[in-house]
Image 1: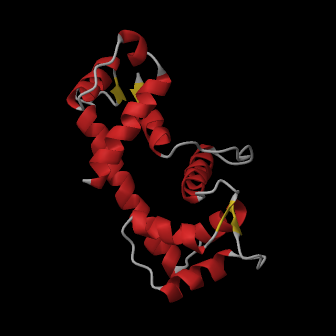
Image 2: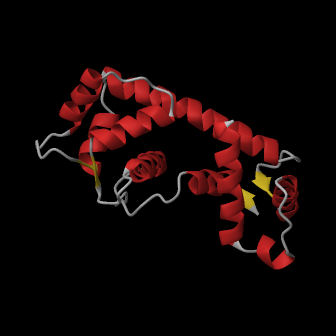
Image 3: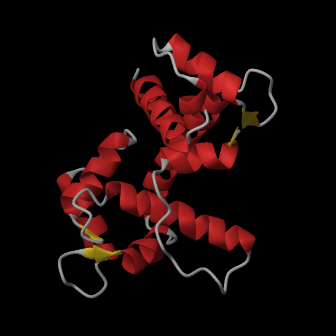
Length: 171
């Protein structure tokens, strides 16, 4: 069974290892979502992001940033002036009232709405969880036949859902 939370985590890849022990449940979810976003745009996996990766994020969520706005965003994020932005710097900026951060957050909200709509489209019985049968029908609709063993494998389920969303969200 694939729940909505698993579905979102599949789409956002991994949440990463972030200490959230001092936060309430809502705060932990927020930090994990921002970490997932950070890891998603950290294309080289180096643990920091630069202006090119922020520009790619903006393009991904259809937010137009001028070169000046992009430079401003990096300057706002890069608190220690190293030329790269750590996760801690990013989340501090992301949660700020910066007009650029606000625009990017709105773009992410729109993307999450697409993901939710996509989940609802697959969740034919409206249960809030994807059954093996629903994922099997999705795979069949995509032209893939899965064995019972493959359907019970989380790795296969994640691959099918990632592929589906890649197609659905880019169309």
